[in-house]
Length: 309
Image 1: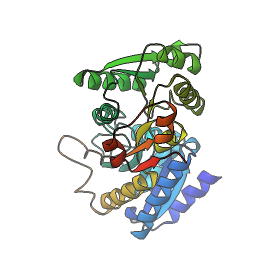
Image 2: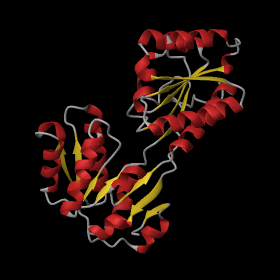
Image 3: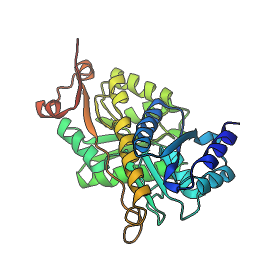
């Protein structure tokens, strides 16, 4: 019924394609909803009609029909962006935000496409780790050997680590008895820090909780991929603002709708995604509990600092 109402709504909107926008969320998580709300504000302020739907509510046939009726689809999250890019007609315009590694997700295609990535290049992440923990030589990574994207993620961090003379110790979660066993196996390899990424195939809530508890017990720091991760017990990490992501996607969407011939198609493919405005987050409560003293320069540059009471 919800999809039927959505189709009727789109059919009733005036014929100008620029006035019909559908936002597709990868899931119900709060950051996705925050991004969607900000994108909606930007689009509505420019005079466009906006509807939103969860990816789980769509089928390929429905997406094709919606793509034909809407002037633009906006994806929130990697899952929605990848699915829409593979499902929509090649000429259908697409915008996105909250996406990890758009190139690996196949989003730098020839279709009219614009977006903002959520991840920071791994070289920059390792640079932060080295600045904060100069003696950390062995970096632990959890991944899944049965997931292509997860394996590519591991290879990217392995290459970046080699360039800065660091060693990667990796454990495949799917090859262990469970996440807790994988974490214990990783920590037993003498790692100095555990690097995490927004790999949904690995980092479910239970895995994050187990990793942080083990980190505190063994006094091995964790580099978190979000502000929430750091607040929960990671020593430090880089975080992006979901609202900022959505607002940027909304602005890019407006430009794509108003200037379809001048944006979204760069020579040799689509315009590259806008980089995430990542901010450093540190947790001095964790630093105190695991007996680590972070350099003052690192603390001073942090946008968010959680301090002991």
